[in-house]
Amino acid sequence: MTALRRIDLVVNGRARSIEVAVHHTLLDVLRDDLGLTGTKECCLVGECGACTVLVDDVSVDSCLMLAVEADRAAVTTVEGLAADDRLHPLQQAFLEAGAAQCGFCIPGQLISAQALLALNPHPTRAEVEEGLAGNLCRCAGYGQIIEAVLAAAEASTPAGEAG
Amino acid sequence: MRAFAYERPTDLGAAVALLAEHGGDACLLAGGTDLIIRLRDGSMQPRVVVDLKWIAELDGEIREVDEHLAIGARTVMTDIAANERIRREYQALAEAASVVGSVQIRNRATLAGNICNASPAADTAPALLAYGARVIAVGPAGKRAIPIDEFFVRSGLTTLDRGELVTAIELPRPAGRHGSVHVRRTRRRGHDLASVTLACAVGEDGMTRLAYGSLGPRPILVRDETGLLADPAAPDLAKMQRLEALFVGASPSPRSMRASPDYRLAMLHVLGLRAVGTAIERLASGIVRR
Image (cartoon, rainbow over all chains, first blue to last red; front, side, top):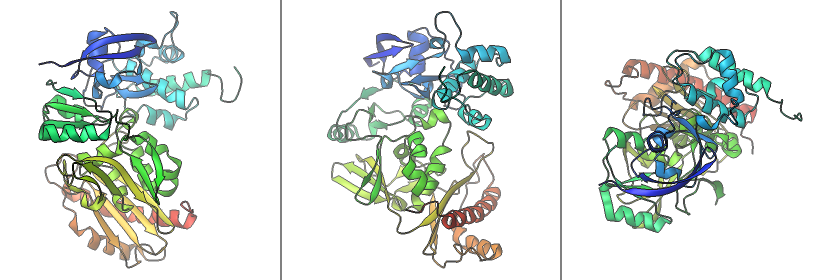
């Protein structure tokens, strides 16, 4: 017996109405039902952050959330960062810093960085470390990842100044 | 994950009725950061999952109610750590909430869920014990308040009756000025469960309340009413002897992989002394002056 439920949500700016199995996670539905495989499945216990997405602008581990809990929410995945064939400034900064080694953790790192900079546009190094503490990189490429986030923050308009 | 039915009640009465109907076959879902893991690994196999997040009476607000600060059942760790009032008057709770899991976990995990899971290592439990919090529960027999020290039994077990659910956690207004702090020991910086998690509150009346977790089946509260621990001039050696007497109930599990019992006991005393010192400094600096 698989119970189904229709949910309405916005994924990367596009309204979706889909029927989901109530015991499937948001991660399952993003990858398997919507084909958005940028969000990665890894530890499935909320420790690695590879599955991080934004739900109503708040970062969450999509492996620890049922898809039905995202009903009427707006979800942003890594596929939603770039606009009009142009990389998001964070993606550009990651590219320039050589922050991706194997690359598996990078979608989650980018989403966590995006959530951090939205709340705190000019974080200290310590604040970046804390903001990304829920995203593990098994290549141990943390130095370049942190540098990339700091560089993206630096490149954006300083707080209080008109752009 | 094994299939289950999903219920989304919109009022408290309906949630209580669902619990009454399904009994032990129902699980409550708040933040889900513990529950989803257990549903996936099969250690919990409910027939029905009851999502509490659409219930109008259960909110994520932190508000003053009759001389108490009431934290709604849906309040997440991120909001507790950021709340100005909690940071000012219940600093140990703000500090504890800010070290639970990672940003992603804190954005979903609720305080109510943290205490209902009753993990001995729950970081928020010692602070709630130190402040004398009350758990507000609703069930078939109505509403009641449970002192937090009478709430925890052992890992995964509380004194909630079958069919009861937590609607809020209330913090009493401090009787006078106090200084408080939360400290913990983990294997690594960042995202880890604590080998020792401890909160301390020193009052201007000389009372010291210390609570610790991860050293036995449930978190433990102890009190020093002699004034020795709160005395800034008392020597550390005398305080350490007092702490040894107070911490006699600590019984860390020999089976845990996080740290050996001897290490946990040693660190409990080290952290206890440090926490007392920090709480005294905060009391003196008037950080919680109202």
